[in-house]
Length: 437
Ligand SMILES: [Zn+2]
Image (cartoon, rainbow, N blue to C red; front, side, top):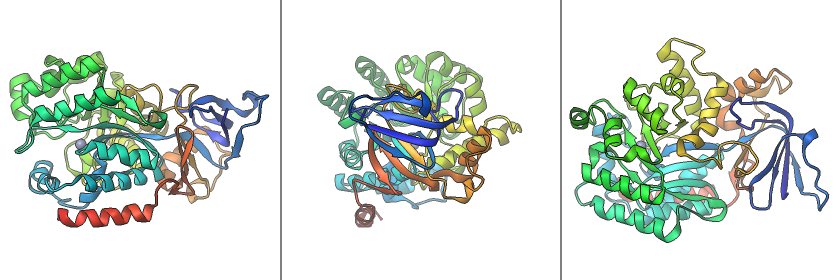
């Protein structure tokens, strides 16, 4: 054991969302959890004692952002009052055409710092110059599921983009980096921005390599009219093309029929639910209660910071619960505990990962410490478990995160990143964004 963290409350993010009082999390030399549970049942190490840290607050797994385009911090605030397709075509795609690799590096570094400070240890990213993004994340110490977008736009050939993903996976493997920090994936942008043969090629190539495929699905009502006319729905189209046979993560998935939900459940397709982005772009409210009732694996995503601007996954936790309740007129539709699990264990399940998202023996020690020195916790921890969870989810949120570890290594201390300088990361984005205007 290399590190023992001892806290008055530990939330392992087990399926019951247990609240462990006087809990301990042990981390081994490789950065994986070797024990999580009550202190009085913790193993006693007869060898040299581990570094033990007594924390005063709540320890929980690092949050998992299942859908993001974080380098878009460079474009934050641009066209923020336009609907999705006009926003993409008139503002975002023209600006992205000017992106240089160094811009993406600066954008991802800042996006990564921003998420880590809020307790998001893993993000699922789809963006250009993915090699630069990998370098950023290795620098900040976060964890990422990375996909270079495959899209058919003027000047961009999907064939060469797919070949680039294949080359990278074949060269470096699906996972690499200290603590397996990088996972490579396929990122076809959407059914409406790619021809059928591109989606078929992605299905074959990703299945050969056992890789995750992340794709936008049924985000706005009018984006995929042609695909729906030809195939009934985008999920049934993806099924026919073979994409639901492997690991697939459907981002947004707002406009789903009962048959689509049943298909996702049957095929083990994961969903990245992005309530904040969907609300801001008036895309609709995803059928979270129905997805959960069908046992579809659902995680939460911020989407890019140009459409949901602060990369704060805690807001998605609140919004997911509020919109699920509002859209079903049922205040019991999603509890605080259920909402928190979506951002942790649920995110891992949606990604098809069993090594993150919960504090369990064998998983990576990706951890968040929430400080209690905040009005949200004025009543203390000596209250019923439900009240601890309610105060954390409904009242506290990201501002109370002070310390973060990834694979057992501390990457945020006292609210600031330990490996990169936040002011310098902000200055780099200021400089890079100038020529994108
Ligand atoms: Zn997106």
